Amino acid sequence: MSQLAENSGGDWLYNSFGLSLQVVWLVEGEHDALRLWQSKKIVAVGISGNCSEKTERFREVMSLKGKRVILAFDLDGAGEEYCQQFENLKLANEVFLARGNGKYHDEWLMDPDSVSLARVG
Image 1 (cartoon, rainbow, N blue to C red):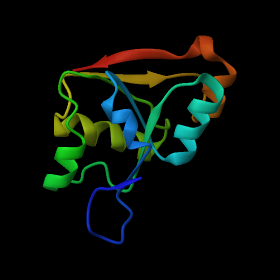
Image 2: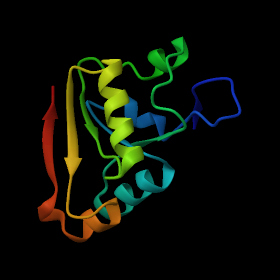
Image 3: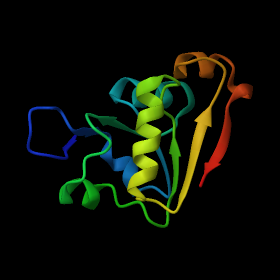
């Protein structure tokens, strides 16, 4: 794990190795990252804490220019907020939203044909 900010709020990345890949999957936390790996062998980075963190450390770690980023957050209020915050930060040139049948990844993975990617911006 990589700590993004010096606070007690838990701004952490789980599996930050995934940031070095050309296609970067971002999910809401370590459980989602583990689930994608266990079921589909997809390397994902779990964001814990606040995706809108604007510290220099956050921007340094999350520099994703030139990479394809797939946001696979839950289809709920928090997930939608993460998507909007990430888009506002302009950390990547090519961003896609992953969507499927159901609110959570476990439901998507039971029906993989329902998963689609929509380009942001």
